[in-house]
Amino acid sequence: MMDILKLEAFVAVAEEESFGGAAARIGVAQSTVSSRIKELESHLGQRLFTRTSRQVRLSPAGEAALPRARAALAALDGVRQAVDDVAGIRRGRVRLGLVSGADIPELGEILAAFATEFPGIELVITSASSFDLEQAVSDGTLDIAVVVRTGRTPLRWKELLRDPLTVVGLTAATATVPVTDLRARPLVVLDAGAGSRTALESAARRAGVRLEIAVQVSTPGMAWDLHSRGMGLLVVPRSLAPNGGTVVVDAEGAETAVRVGLISHPDVRTSATELLLERLAALMSPTTA
Image (tube, rainbow, N blue to C red; front, side, top):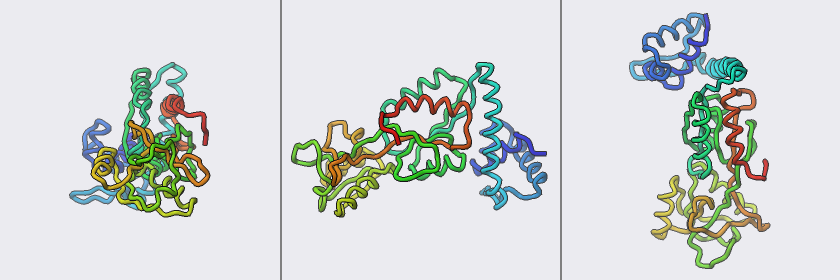
């Protein structure tokens, strides 16, 4: 028989890559997890995992089953939350991903207020590159992610802000600098998968110039340190240049910026996820995607 407890154990083992880790996550004994997996495999007639003394990996059948198991659990959770909504109860779990290197000052305040208003909803927050976060939302590992958008996406998208790129270290005190003026200048670029380099080099290509990226780093502290040691001009989003910088403009004079926004799966939704999306949408700028 296939039931929610067996599916929950299967997804936990797949994500933790460990029977012990799965047991700790769902709060049961490891033997219980093993028993549930064996019963599920017996019901399906296929091995879902390959096991060694050190590793637990999904089998081909397990790889095929995992996205559907996640969707089934999300659907069941949606049924429970729909009933809770009628009763005025708010509970559940939302897995939120945050892109590394992006800085949204209001985000911490909103998440804290959300946790206070809905103590029955657990927030699980992780950080990664935009590419990895989009993959995680697509396969159901995450519910929502704050990412930098650099192209089209089949996921739901809500833009929060556009963060202009600024150059720190120019001698001339001007409000803007054409991307063409950065040609042949060594640049220290803060990226961490947050799209800064992509946005900068896209503007340069449109202007017909090639930039000299001396170094790309993943943390603001390292970026500022290398800039201070003469490695090159520092290029960071304006939100990470507290003392100001010169905004980069493209060949048409428009600001070069990274687009920060929310992605969520168009088909897998729960009440808890929609609640958090509503709160995060309060960050949206007047500009829409």
